[in-house]
Length: 115
Image 1 (cartoon, one colour):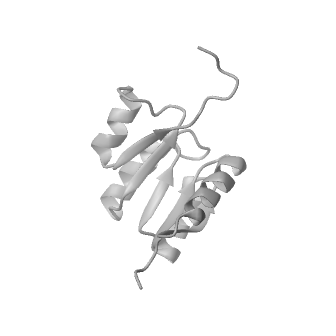
Image 2: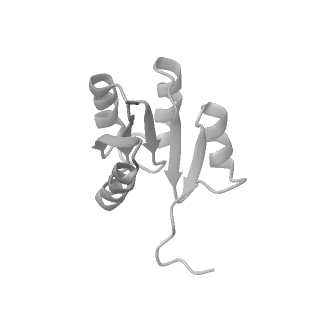
């Protein structure tokens, strides 16, 4: 039997953390092993639980996701998926995240914003 990919979700929104954990846990080959509302909580969780992958928001309290991504890649490189309203194809912040080592990005839907 193959081991499931262990994921930690890092986002300041409780709703987003809950939704992402649910989506991850529905996948037969993945499991959400924890969620964190800011990078400082995430740092300890990463040390304790040793995930295979993390999802990471950009705008968060205490430290933004780009700074945290840079620290992760220096201290404990791992696959990081950026999930934010700011991560869009071609956006400067998206390019910065990819340069720092993020493996990919997903744009969150913008609630209440109309084009």
